[in-house]
Image 1 (cartoon, one colour):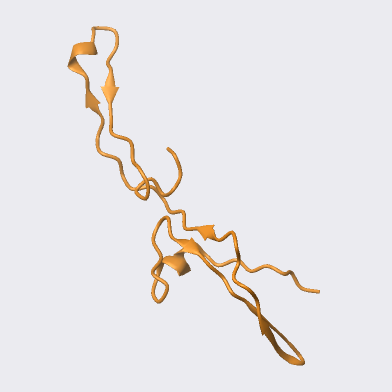
Image 2 (cartoon, helix red, strand yellow; image 1 turned 180 degrees about the horizontal axis):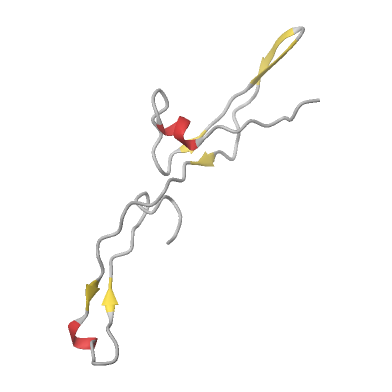
Length: 90
């Protein structure tokens, strides 16, 4: 018996004709085929899968002058949020 799973690369799902974006839910319906023909369509998956991508580039960090001393430097930055963070906390 073959494996009851199938891997579809994210690159396929974000390209045409699907054109999904980070945060989109993937809903799947499958249909099996064997030597006797095609089986019925499955129900939609109920949990779905979320498209997760590589994070975008963050803006450069900024030095906080009031907190900078001769022995340390304090920086701050604006964190990426969904979907720019690739749907994963950084």
